Length: 254
Ligand SMILES: NC(=O)c1ccc[n+]([C@@H]2O[C@H](COP(=O)([O-])OP(=O)(O)OC[C@H]3O[C@@H](n4cnc5c(N)ncnc54)[C@H](OP(=O)(O)O)[C@@H]3O)[C@@H](O)[C@H]2O)c1
Image (cartoon, rainbow, N blue to C red):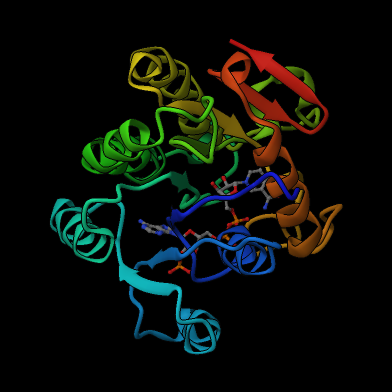
């Protein structure tokens, strides 16, 4: 993991779960980032209490208000990042925020449930990536001497084993979540191809089945275990991994 040396990272959905775990794991790296942008829907609400506590002990953290469904929030977040980083550019974007209403079965599906998942899980990572792209390109250009990877410029979209039907439980019926996460995996592959010539690596990554609000208490691993192996994986990413979706030990090419 010592090879992971990211100067700046922006993480969406950092108030709890995997996002907050990643913020903490970055701080524990032998060579932690100079700037960690930990974004969340509302930095002042109860959901963000732990993030505020972590940030109060770590000057490298900038807490950013960002609801990934809001274009105004996205624009303000970019202004903040640009202001803090100046000409340095942003090395790494982790699109982690997502919703999972856990609504089961075709008969209970509603248009609202589908569109709200689309807004957060599909439009969210695409629009946040679009808005931060100039800063990622800047970092890539400034680190031209480095190989393609997280230390240069990269986008990591949180994925799930559920994009592969062979990983489903026999009664898998969470249409909105599974369909939108599958769409994001396709978007990840498209972005990886478009941004490769700019020196920006794009991959998808599942955090495993993690004990979070979304993962539930029966999940296999803790947030800390997930975040540790997530960063280990980030440290080995290189050009050949572009467009790959990492699910546990497999690397899917879709
Ligand atoms: N846990 C698992 O087992 C598992 C497995 C596979 C993939 N994943 C993926 O891992 C990622 C994190 O999941 P998790 O388990 O940590 O979920 P979680 O505990 O439910 O946390 C989700 C985070 O996303 C935030 N969020 C939700 N809607 C948002 C929006 N519109 N704008 C900005 N932030 C928003 C939440 O903010 P609030 O706290 O304010 O609601 C929260 O911080 C997701 O992409 C998920 O699909 C998780």
